[in-house]
Image 1 (cartoon, rainbow, N blue to C red):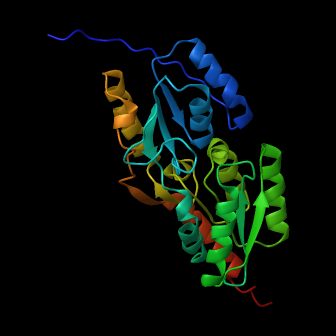
Image 2 (tube, helix red, strand yellow; image 1 turned 30 degrees about the horizontal axis):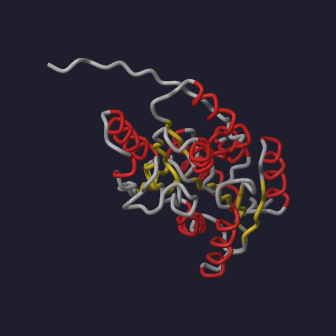
Length: 265
């Protein structure tokens, strides 16, 4: 009969502030941890830069481009994990949102310029917009105050909807984003179902819950003795389109009232 093993988890959060990551990783290394779980490219890069010996399991977009692994099938080194394919879905999100926005209204796009792939996100969306006959308004935000400013700007510019691009900082601020969209009765689309659970209108992307589950499986296998270099990076298996029906009914009701002609006197 095998002996039960007890594992201790040590958590560190950057709260969306990427400049804190090297210090947090160094703290984990001082704890002499057996493995580092790094969620998101900035965290994974910080862990990869800090150690070549401690195993790393990540969830990340484009892990090859970020230098986390040599290839998806043969990672090499001390890191492996889950490839979260979300940045490639921005154009599809724009298309889905456009179906709910009047053709004459621009769509606002919120991007973190200090994020994972801001240039690619902007480029992909600028390329997708003409194909579906849309004008987009790109707004930047790297802080809570910036998000408030972005909403004031998009209201002044009469944007018909909002696309929040995929970024860990925005995930951390999802309650604020959802609340502002609701306050302004603005249809908005996001990457993860957690936004819809918080009251957001619609989300489209991979299942982050499934990605974390897959990462957990790898963590267990490595702690039992397998090597990260021999475990291929896992690809997403589940894509989700999630609509919050309560929010959709509330938005549709406000939209119909705004479109109704004024009563005759």
